[in-house]
Length: 244
Image (cartoon, rainbow, N blue to C red; front, side, top):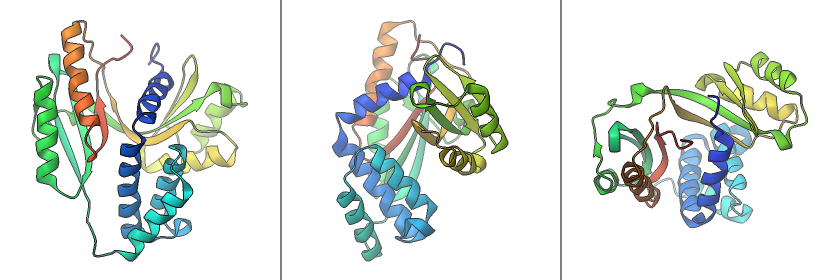
C-alpha cells in the first residue's frame, strides 16, 4: 500500500461531497430510516442508528434534521420501504466497479446504473463478476495531525482490539479489520481518545489497475460522476489506481 495516501483520497472525496450536501443528506436520511425501522429510534439501543448519526454529524447534517428523520421513520412504519441493491460491472480497460444502492424502486435504480456505465463505455455484469477482486474489510483512517499517540502504541492498541493490519502513510494511519471486528476496534480507539477521520466497512481492491490512457480515465470518470448524481447510489468502489 506504499505510495497510496488513502486519507488524501478521502479528503478529495469529502471536498467533492461538500459541494453536494443535498445528496448526502438524502442518502443519510434513507440510512436513518432503515436503521430506525430495523432496530428502533433509540440510538442507545440501536448501534446501527448510532453509527449513522455519527456519520451524519461528520457530514455536518443539522441535529434537528437528524431528529426529524428519526421521528418520521419511527412514526411512519407503513411508509416508504427502502431496499439495498448491489451492481457489479466493468469500466474502461477492464476496471472493476461495485455499486451499492439503497432504493425504493429497483427498476429505476438498475436503469440509472446501467445508463451510467453506458455513458463511459462500460457495462454492467452479473452478480459476483468483479466482487471476487475485492476484500470486504473494516477500514479506519487516523489523521496523523490529529493523533498524539505514537505509531507503535496505536498499532498495539488496534491489534489488541482485534485489528488485522496496520499501515502508516505519509499523512495518516490505516487500520484494517475483519468486518465483524470493526465495531470493537472502532470503540477501543474512541475510548482511548483517538480521533477517527474516516471509518467504515468497505471493499478494498486486491490489486489496482492503472489507466495510462487519458481517454480511459475520462471515460471512467464519466461513469463515476453519473453514479454520483444518483440519489439511490450509496457508495461506489473501483480498483482504479487514482494515485497514478
